[in-house]
Image (cartoon, rainbow, N blue to C red; front, side, top):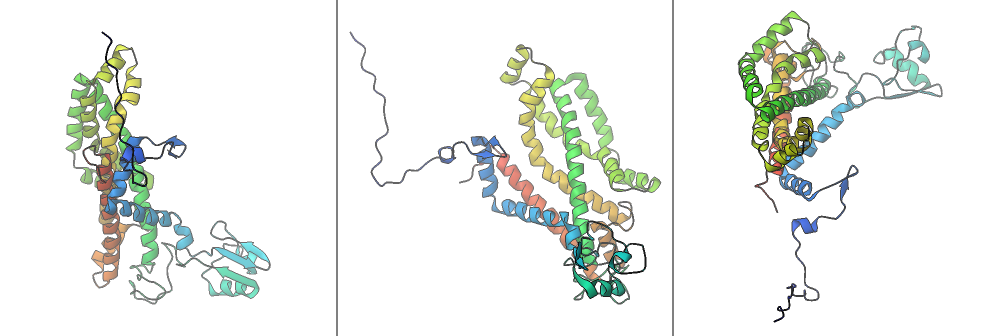
Length: 376
């Protein structure tokens, strides 16, 4: 008796002119690449989920535009001209330093481009292209006193208590806050991920010892210790970054440790051990990619906390050196000068917008990496 003929079921043909509905994976273009690397269907789904969160998606682009603009703060707010044409030659004071004698002056020192006499010398044989805001963060404006001066056509957001333009200080302060937060977030994440990976993967006495140390270290009053250390040494950007890095790395340890404790007993990890692969290779290539998801979703909130801590120290007077552009310092000026509400209002508005945008981006990233959520 011969076996029955096998028949493969085929879907019915689609009528001519009828639309065909494709699943998201089928609709993904084949061979789609980004920065030279092929985008997998999983990455594509995460990007689609991130884009589906409209609030977080547009917050990301708004924050990117604002931060990108502040990276070129010297071209937006500066007391040096962008371009000078004098006696047939071009000069770019924003990049180089020129003596006053180069423009027909008598002094061999650097030209003061806010001096009316220097302006007359240049305009007599050429022209000047200035930034939209003709002040740096430390430039004393020409606004009549007493300071703080109210907003005007020359100073759009007024001046602070030393006669410096508030808008210029906000632009430079935004850049310093974000750069400081990014540097602290990246460095603390590297240390926290490494510590959490060691604890979760090896366990035992290593895990027990690290946990007891972190419990003691996390129980220290961080803000008070930072104030004490900052009062002993005059802090600058890098010194303050190192001080805060001592305490900020513990925020990611528990998250990464939990992921490694869960993943170290998976079958593919046991198979890698059975094949004789070294622990370093198993951690980096097999377990760490799973823990990276939880780390990435947590990083925007770490960035928020880093910016808030720097602002708090500047507000208390234990942050960046005096004269540095800082949102916290502007808030302190607003508190000390209640008769000048533009100081506190502008600094608070910029800080609130920045933190809100980062929070919305963090929520969108969390949704994008959540396997239980899929948006149409």
